[in-house]
Length: 177
Image (cartoon, rainbow, N blue to C red; front, side, top):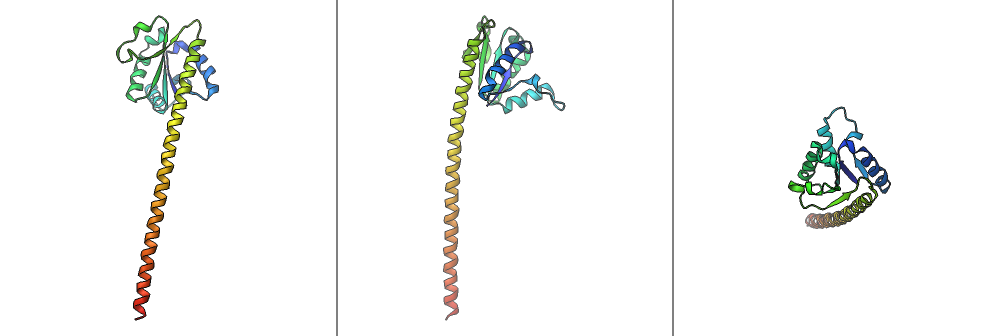
């Protein structure tokens, strides 16, 4: 599962801890500064990462609240209808404004990130399970549609063969007269 990680660059230690802890669970993080691009701007790179992601993880730390990029990334996640999990540093809960107000979040204690990491892991794994279930349902629907199309094709072929056989019988009968 692909996760776009929205954060302030100054939160490097937290970012590294999240990635190191959760990568073994098959969670792939898109982190803008970890990807070098010679043919696109930082904005284009971030937009592409968000588009390819299944979900966003937004770190709203003291530094993240003041980052224009984090605020823009939240807006772009919303415009792309991507779900996202908010991780909010203790003491900043009351600063949630605008469209994020009232959205659930995971509380982050900067002095003890383990509890938040466990909650992040639980939420992301639960979301991944939901995606897998939805994709399985879609796969089952696709298989059913393909089977129905194959049956229709076979019926059409059989009908065409029947018509050809009838025409052949008529042709032979008219020649024998």
